[in-house]
Image 1 (cartoon, rainbow, N blue to C red):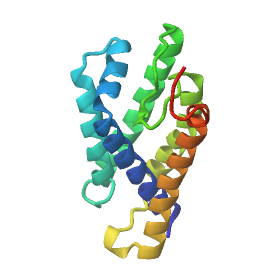
Image 2 (image 1 turned 45 degrees about the horizontal axis):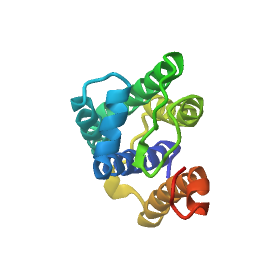
Image 3 (image 1 turned 120 degrees about the vertical axis):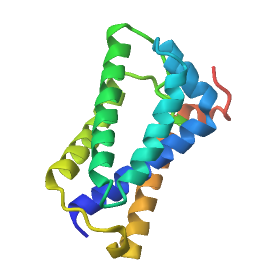
Image 4 (image 1 turned 90 degrees about the vertical axis):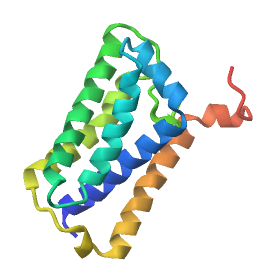
Length: 169
């Protein structure tokens, strides 16, 4: 499996997971968008674009479009995190819906950096391998690796909430 294929699987999984988590916690994500002073309909657009990108990455005919959407969205997320810092807007990231309760800010930008690097590598290498040629074991392993990483990160970020029995404050 090439590095480009591994990055494709990881980013596709992450964007699909993120869009589904935002969809499940749509109210919270919409609230984040509004607190950032954007129109609430933009929340739906972000979810659709994440879902779309996750699918477009998987097929040769649409892979480049998916790469560009992913790169554009990561850059947009950087911009929004920077805006929250600049304007001192205290808002939950909602990067993975309500599964992540950390504030939008510097930590968000730090977490976006490897994703930006991965998306850039994927775009530059352009060594796409058709999905039918992916080894099932490798693909399933990478999907579960990404889901596990997101889950562990969410648990770590919410450890205080978990210790208090799920009661905030």
